[in-house]
Each structure stands twice: as structure tokens, then as C-alpha cells.
Image (cartoon, rainbow, N blue to C red; front, side, top):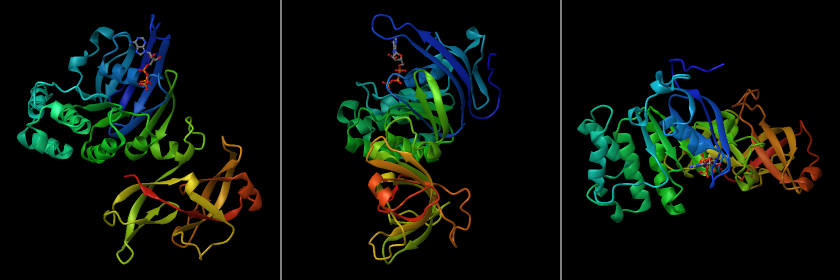
Length: 383
Ligand SMILES: Nc1ncnc2c1ncn2[C@@H]1O[C@H](COP(=O)(O)OP(=O)(O)OP(=O)(O)O)[C@@H](O)[C@H]1O
């Protein structure tokens, strides 16, 4: 049965495309059904060649051979069985940011932006123009030509250009992939700001778990032309069976709130739905929502509470599940924080994952249901 987009929130639709690949590529087919949030960042993640770029191109109307349907926050862009009525690419109100910034080299940044502003879907006021420039921190770069800007600066101008057309959806295809590690670190805070400032949906393709963990609210996993899983990023990235070996990156993402500042020791207390964690004070305000990452390799386990240790964060936990690791010397433990006076209910709390040696698990006689203390060596704020 053909799926027709209905009006309402979110990005809804389906796409179907087959190509034989010709002389240069293997045959490929894409078959996906979309039901994505209408705001926030949706990360699209999957192995090379699984169809992430092709999916974005379908949404942009750049794959004329794709059949399907699409509605973006209630506006129908194409309907099943009516290909002639589909909006062509130049009539789809979207911004596209590619791996390469592709600014016009003979124009300076301001002229590149003016070019986009003229093509905006609605008039862009001077105040809106200035707020986009401020958001990307490019005010001091406006008189420079792309050749005089670093890769990260060019990409910030390219993102501003995409926003100046007042898109209803922003498509970002590995926007940091061409940058070195330092430039990536430099630009990520701008993307985080963007995420908070915009109320349009952002579809963000990336191969990087770090980027996805920092930016994505929702996650779509793709493989071989299909969507294999999707859901809240925090839940999917915390699964031991995440389809890509995360190795040392395996861990959980926790949504937390800054509950207390300890100025004497420069620490912050962050409460999550399974307990509290102390973090180094990096300037967040009490009441701020943050996202923290606890890696499986940073958790060690003790039978009793080890109060003589230098480790600040200790949580009473119960072993919920034990599973094999890809490395035969290791096991993975899913840990459920136990109820405490401050967190009386352990029914729905966030889980932790620990990765310890099989020998340690044996020595500690770990079984499902064992009650232990998790010592957390390091906690990183990712947003
Ligand atoms: N111009 C083309 N003609 C034929 N096949 C193509 C063409 N471009 C891409 N393909 C094939 O389509 C499939 C999906 O490609 P796509 O670029 O969407 O994957 P991807 O997940 O974005 O990959 P990557 O992460 O490497 O960018 C791949 O098998 C690729 O080889």
C-alpha cells in the first residue's frame, strides 16, 4: 500500500530507488520509510555506501529516479503516484550543507551570503541577518574571500549561507568530514548553538560517534539501503548491540541537570534519572540541561563501597544483564542504578554499561542480580 504523507508535524514519507550502478558502482537500492521529528537534530549513521547521502538527496529532490512521498512539518513536497506534482529541487525550502563548503571563490564571505539572502524563501530582515552572523561567529570574516579563510571558517560561512535562505529543513552531509581534528573541535560548539537556536529539523549525516553523541537528539541507523533502527539518540547509542563496533567509545549517554555548584572544589553535581554524578565545573549554570557520556571502560566494580578511593563517583548498582564482548577477554555488564534516598525509584532509571575482564567478573562472582558498586573514573559533558 502506498504511504501518503499526512499533514502534521515531523518529516514523514517514503522513498524507493534502484540503480544498476553502471560501470563504476555496484547495483544499489534504497527503500526507506521516514517518520522523523519536526525539530532538533536527527543523526543519520551507517557504513559507507549504505545510502545516507542518497537519502538526503531524495529529500532535496535531487534524485529524480526516486519514487516516494514527503511532507515536512505538514507541507507536502511530493505524493506517491504523482511524480509530476513533486516540488522540484529549486522549490523545496531547504538548506544543504555539504562536506566541502563550496563558496564562490571570487566573492568575499559577505557577497557569498548576499547571494543566498536574495534567494531566501521569505525576506531576511537585517536583525535576522545579524543574528545568523552572530550565531556562526563570522562577523570578522565578512570581508575575506574563501581562499583567505580556514576550512572551519569556510564551513561556518557555508552554514550561514544555508540558513539565510530561511529553510524549513536543514540537511547536513558530513559537514565536518573535510576538517582536521582541531577545526572540528572549533566548529562543534557552533553546531551545538545552532541546534539550540533553530526550531527547524536538522538531518545530520556523520560517521563520527563523537559528533552524533554531541549533536543528535534522534538517531537513524542505516544499512544497505534500509533504515535498520531509529529512536532517541541517548537510547540507541547506549545499546551494547549498536551495529558498529564502538570499541573504546562504547558507553552510555545520560540526560542530566546541573543541580548544585560546589565552588570550593570547582565541581558541579549533575542529577540524572539513576543518581548523581560530580563533574569538573566547566561553567554551566545550576538548572542547565546537559548530556554526559560515561564510557564502559571507565567503570570499575567493587563488592562494597570503596570510600578510600580517589574516585569521586560511586553508585550502587545491580547487574541486569551480562553479555559477551567482541574481545574474548572482556564482558559487558548492563547495570541498573539501585534506588537510593535521593533517587527512590530504580524502575525506569538510565542504565550504565561496564566493560571489565572476564577474569575480574569471575573473581567478583558477578551474576545477574549481583549488587555492586560502580566506580566511575571519568564523566564527559558532551553538550
Ligand atoms: N552516481 C552514482 N551512480 C551509481 N551508483 C552510485 C552513485 N553514487 C553513489 N552510488 C552508490 O549508491 C550507494 C549509496 O551511496 P551513498 O553515497 O548514498 O552512500 P553513503 O552511505 O552516503 O556513503 P558514504 O558514507 O561513503 O558517503 C553506494 O553503493 C554507492 O556506490
